[in-house]
Image 1 (cartoon, helix red, strand yellow):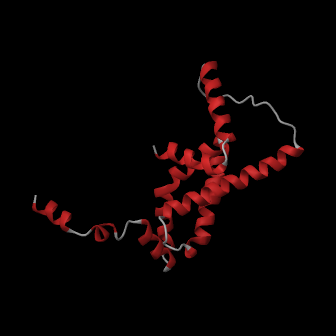
Image 2 (cartoon, one colour; image 1 turned 30 degrees about the vertical axis):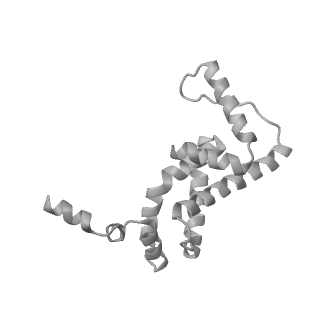
Image 3 (cartoon, rainbow, N blue to C red; image 1 turned 135 degrees about the vertical axis):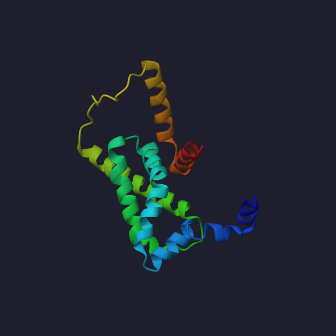
Length: 157
């Protein structure tokens, strides 16, 4: 019991000193590039989820997540510590998704649209597929300033 009380008496910043994002970023900026893998491991699933929710394409998730973390790696030295790291990371993620969507719009002008014959790997009823399509189409029609916060809210719960 005594040890537990001692842990509770420590100020919060001392407990988090080695593990919080800001400390890891500071260590990275000071030259300890090995801490970047901790940041990636800590945040990769949320980044992947944002990408999937935004683009609805499993095949693109890993490639765009890699682009996100490469951009973060290259620009982490410019992080200003004015907001949470996750806020900045999610903004980078959303921007990469927007970049991809812009590229796809340009390609769609020149390429015919193909019907997808892909098997989702599980059975779904036509009603569920219709509802998914309606919701997906409605979300896609929202302006970015409404769609992105909605997707982040869905992701965070």
